[in-house]
Amino acid sequence: MNRSQVFFTNFRTNPNENLLQKFRRLLERAGYAKLDLDGKFVALKIHFGEMGNLAFLRPNYARVVVDFTKERGGKPFLTDANTLYVGSRKNALDHLDAAYENGYNPFVTGCHVIIADGLKGTDEALVPIAGKYVKEAKIGRAVMDSDVFVSLTHFKMHECAGIGGALKNIGMGCGSRAGKMEMHSNGKPSVDRELCIGCGACARTCAHDAISFDSKKKASIDKTKCAGCGRCVGRCPRDAVYAAMDEKYEILNKKICEYSLAVLQNRPAFHISFVADVSPFCDCHSENDVPVVPDVGMFASFDPVALDLACAEAVNAQPVVSNSILSSKKSTGDHFQTMHPDTNWRAVVEYGAEIGLGSLEYDLIEI
Image (cartoon, rainbow, N blue to C red; front, side, top):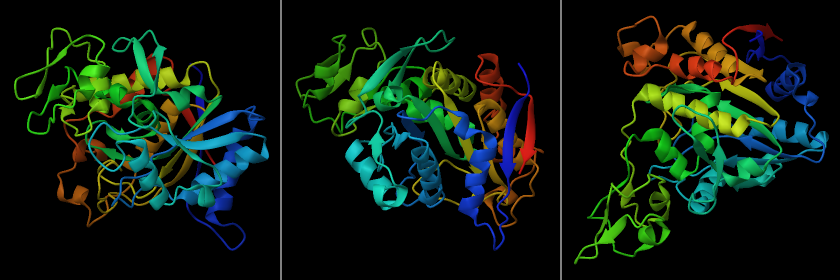
């Protein structure tokens, strides 16, 4: 594969150009305007931030992309899919509340928010792919209904994937709740009997007659019948049905790549990452710790693999912030491995390149 181009600018400003203007200039130089946006529905995939976490991207950045898109005739909307874990974004109503409270509302961003997989995380499109691990990805329907896809990513560390970059934002972020279960789990869901209220919602959504109830009206799942689709996880009103979350981290990263392939294949796409407030954990946490390295800058590319690699290498080139959690750990020479030694962040870029999502060879073009 040919060398990709990754465009970069730091966060330095002057009286003649503020940070948002500089970000707009990055979009122009990186070629976003080359996409045919006129009359197209443009999905802007972003993480709205868990309530209590303040490391997520400011909505002002999203507004720049929205305005840039509208000026070229596009119809942008901000989107994310519901979470698998129990938190403030597990259904569309709570998710919208979190997005609005964190500033992602039409009055600030200039466009609407659409939760990609619907009210309960079950509105999904089944996307066939020739993956090694995934044959039919479960992607939030609103994402698949869009004509153009743009990822807007807060680049950070991640306790399972190693890095929380563009591919993580795309693959895991666009998966429905059942899709997230498929990526995170090597097995099939189970039932917490203490939480089960015997309402039958899980059984009604099961297409394989795998769920039954005992004399106390507590559900159980027959693993020999269960297909592992995960729809019962999204249907349970008490979060009594849960995923095993037992997939090996390296396989998790590869499944993320295959889900990214499902999202990106056969459609125009563009990718933006901010290496700022690089937190040691995902923005899905209800807290954020001190950034582990200094802020680096803004990156953009048509290639999500090269973009993730460029961001990771930029982070590894930074000194460790002295009062961060990373400063208390013995360095391995790789900040991500030092922070999360059981992970392998390189698996996501290497496998992404292997399946054709992008290139490990890139030119960094500073503006």
